[in-house]
Length: 453
Image 1 (spheres, rainbow, N blue to C red):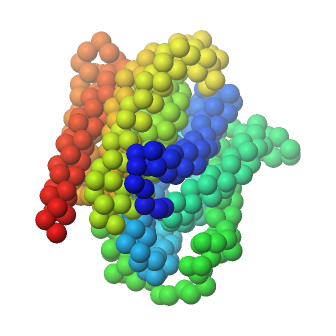
Image 2: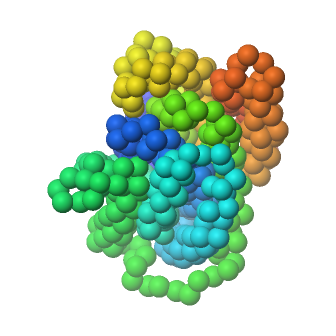
Image 3: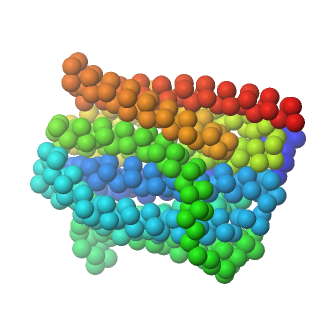
């Protein structure tokens, strides 16, 4: 990261940060994408099982990773304020916290997995696949959290190409693992959707090991000596990160979990409907990695400028990100509309599943517009370390507006299962509007504050 003086310089720097993050996020989600696509080609029951498993796994994993994302604005502001000496200990305590959270999540999952699945009206094979998909993917939960913590540290230094390099190595290996364990190739057992969980766990261990090795040996990370001067865990340091990370994590959890809640509500419909819903949501989520990447880049850029008390520059980055997100939403909408049949057939060739998937994709065109506007706003606010208000905004928008309206539309109108997707559109739109208002207020408040100093 470095100071910029013109809009052209800002666009150049922002692009240099964003493009590797974008490739990294798309590649990371591509693992889930290939899990879903390859499981679907193993059978509709396998796809539905992975859908249910993912609906439980993704909110938890992304929520915890959101908590760990606190390291990005903290490190970015330390670097912006030229306070590099406090960076290593901040990262070490973050690693301790990642391990602790991984253990807690594993214990809770062990106790609650069967009771939760038993509450759902699932076919026997779908329940079996969902259960063991979650058990196998859980083997890699601690290395996944460690990797994401260290990746946020790497990105906060502006070294986003490193994260891209690691994921580009891991992605083809993840596909190969999927091919082995889903379809029983190269001497591996044929496990269907459960094999996708094994493949993901192996990949998490792999990327964690590579990331630790790079931080240990490669400059500028090696200069911080993160793995050479271990200290004891500090509850106070954990609390400092959690004060920022918990609101971030819950904000992400509320947004992601509404999709998972919809998937769980879908369990009352046919296996084909569940499979079609999962296929459409999976591809739409793949596109969402673009505005999510913009959000991550904004957290770094805005955090750096705020740390240096250059509030006008931080504001410029914020609006750059919003404009980029809206432009991408327009392009993505045309892609979904023009290639709905081809997208549907990626997941399953059953004519009924394909037709249902195309219907769901139509609704995805609209809610991804709200996502593309709202995600950069969240990223910008994280750069300001303004996370508590956005937490409440997310709760109200997604769970008190979006989900109830979706349930009403699904059960009391002719929309049927598509009513839940209408609820997603309503909730995401409400969230985006309130986030914009919060960002506008905060920017003006800080401009006034620093104008008087």
